[in-house]
Length: 144
Image (cartoon, rainbow, N blue to C red; front, side):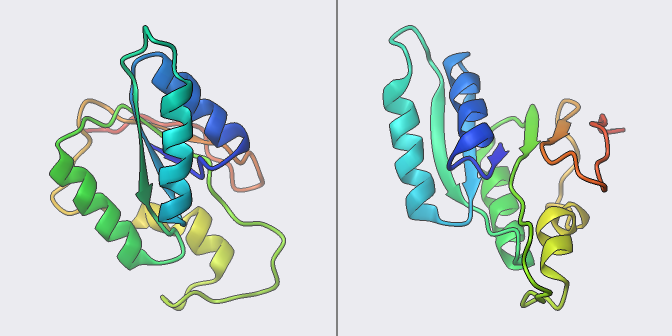
């Protein structure tokens, strides 16, 4: 799963993972844009690649969207090997989400506090935080 895979580092990360035969889910706020970029990336893969790129909706500013994404992922039975936390918001005025939490905090840190239903870490998930800002935490292995 690559959050914020529309462009830049997220898009290139998704492209390389798919080129290396991974199934990559672009988890993005705008479903239509995620699906469009997923199609573009899928078409750009070499003929020898068996990778797949999927575009799914995930709005990190809404816990209901995070929960819906997690439920969809669990129902897919796809393994989760890597979570690239590339999405984030910066340089906005103070804003509160519909969940009553400051926008920056919820979008960049809040979803990690919402465990997927019936979820454990399948196979030792590695999480990578793309934004190395002041709240950066190094990747960690799931203890399960």
